[in-house]
Image (cartoon, rainbow, N blue to C red):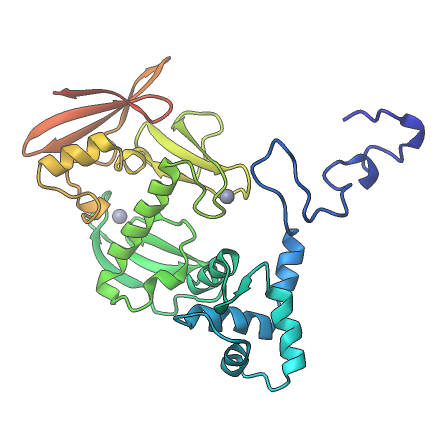
Length: 322
Ligand SMILES: [Zn+2]
Ligand SMILES: [Zn+2]
């Protein structure tokens, strides 16, 4: 940016010349062209809840079936001093907790915060030994196993070390799940991830998510992405930076054309794990044209192959019987 008044400028890197850092009153600022106003700065939000009593208040209200009186909340949280308790509850009220004629209950931001912690993204770790999934590797005769690695869950073949997924999956999804069902839960979670992406939402922060088709011989193609299809999909959130690479078939398996085609052939893609969709051969995706981009995904069911062709926006342009 250019400073309009150079004599007052303290330099291009100073906080005073940086519009993003120049608003010390960040809270409650509103812009007439924006749908949302910043009510609370992120560090303020964390400061409000980063206290044991305050977080216990949120959990107690989350567990309650109905609004609670002041005395009921205090009793459930277990704080004897009403004055001290009132101070902490007051800090949360209007932001994370609502107080009306019925009593105290969680406001939507408080409910989301408790949900994020319960999902286990911060607090839980998969402690078991690697889980043998029984899922056959699509590249060798080996079997995929699930293991907790570097705070994320990986599904990988022990024999050839082909990675099925290494997206950070919150360990909380495995609560009450038997080891033999763990792989299927991973499949459901990954499909939910892609469904969110199909609607343009980042699964991590609800920001806008970009989906792009990438080619295996792109100069900046990631070397650690070992899909052997000619094309794959890249997802990237401009807000929180969450992003991942996906094989092309798993990026389009929830497209209505593929969902409908499978359904007409007796296969529900929601409940059939991706690796059991036998018609979607790994490595069969091809690039039919680069300009305009056309990516073909053959699906073979009962010996008959139908080819679904997608464009650069992952939209279907053609469906033909081969
Ligand atoms: Zn393998
Ligand atoms: Zn995001």
